[in-house]
Image (cartoon, rainbow, N blue to C red):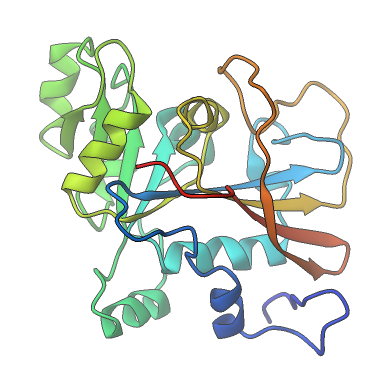
Length: 256
């Protein structure tokens, strides 16, 4: 049985359809020239973004339920190469029920998988590619080793989105050209930091896990210089037992 999720003080558990309505892509604005970028993370009550190096150790059934539903409505999943390796991405990103749901709504049955890797340090023979239901798209930098690019072009589409590193604005251009309007970003922290610095974070879905971990675990953001605090609007708070599921959006008109 899936985890029960409800609005605090609400009338009862929410169905999948009600949860999808709560997580509607209302970050979209008329006339937008780039995709909507929504980030999704889980964090402990004391700020850890991982346990034993992986975020999966922090999530519960409620987090996993929302994680799957967020993938249902996106055009593409964007993820950094480090997270791909750490979390073991391979095979289907969505189940048969979601593929049918998407097909009924004239969406591609499976969302695109977009991997950010400035150096293309990926194994072309790995299950990430051999088990991929759709051909992945790799966003890389112009300085990536030509030999790696040639090997990976056999199993994925490769696009340059920056000179020395992948630049978020150029990544947005490539994704827009491919028709990816709703992009769900699943990490990791360096990708989130880069998109924050570029002003391209439209929404943040954050699961607050009711655990503490201490230690030296990373935050959900890394690699970017400290910025002047930018406000977020709280779109909703959901609860499943002691777990809180928060959704924020950037206020005001989205950047073009």
